[in-house]
Length: 224
Image (cartoon, rainbow, N blue to C red; front, side, top):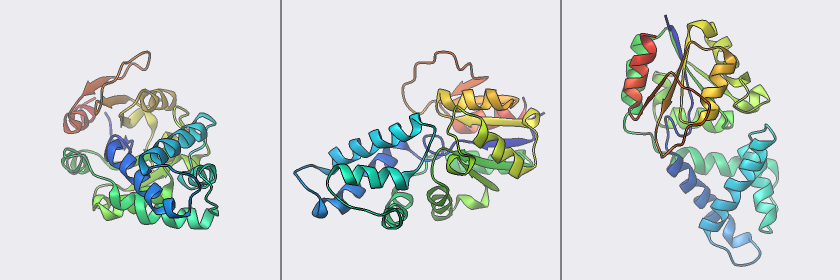
């Protein structure tokens, strides 16, 4: 029986669209200091590419990626300033999916512990959880900058379960991408659920359940 639930954060609990909107706002803040002519939309796409470059190397750092993206448009940022800027912009602009609060409420009654395991930066994820009032439902946060590797490596899933005091054989994982499911498989969790927030073409991840409603997946996890 599944006793512990681990959820991805970006794309599962908060929308990726609102995350992209926060990247645009970062561009607006930097624009007066930049070289050349570019729009906040263009900066958002650049910043997303830089983040993907970091992810492909097994690293996740909103802060260091912002330093690099800013450099590419002619703005000098140090790590401390980039960190302050991200914390001032990103958590506030994130939007929680409509079914996420209900799903977390249900999860808090069905499981011995609920955790978030995210490829985001810990300070950003924790601040977003606090601002959106989700800390009443989430006991543990684990992030890939702490674990040292990004999904599909299972390190962040294992870290979340270690902090919950749960065994993978007693755990469920819900995410919105194949890399979440693969990380859960490598970690040895009992249940792997995929919430479909956008069009996806599945290849080899083989989730145990796929649904558009996060609440349904939480209930399925509890009876697996």
